[in-house]
Image (tube, rainbow, N blue to C red; front, side, top):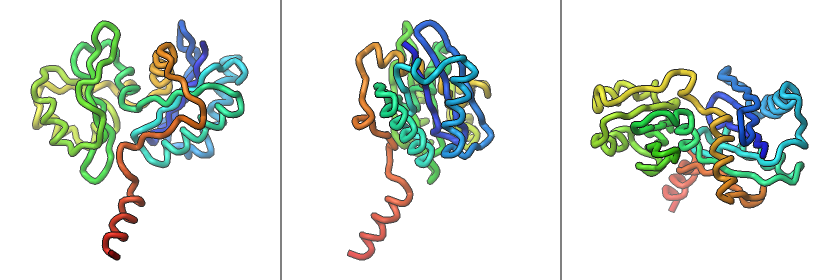
Length: 235
């Protein structure tokens, strides 16, 4: 089973090919790519360098959010287009859980946080137990203090994601030496982790078609919130 993984939920973009036995190849750039222009060429180059064709791909796995609203839309739209062209099943992978798949070797609590602006993070907490990634704090948009207050009962917590540089000082102040931080090469979204989680979801029968798969933003966009405020003001 060969899976093409796609992640564009942050300023970086990542694509990967993975089968049941190994990671075949991965292409990640943190150079603030223009995802709309660069994503499909990245897929083409990955397939070429892995000496494979799109016809070899059996499933599309895409990070469905939360994260950058624009990035999610680009990645999901590209995945849907590829699914339609190849008549392939598609799997929408939760971004935060895919981040936890970056560090399956960690025995403590894994807490991915993404900067959601407006003094919030998209966050969740997971714990690996016998190869299973269990959610211990629900994925949602949180004020950082509200999320950290739910973690005070745990001893070993590893943080990762683009929310860490923004809130590291607050994390250390509240949790002290109970908090650790993932190394840079594991701290951001990776298409290989998206593909690995998609593989697990595929074995569980969680396959969709391009019409069924939806992005998961966790909260409304700034434009939607502004429109709602304008409507209330005009009532």
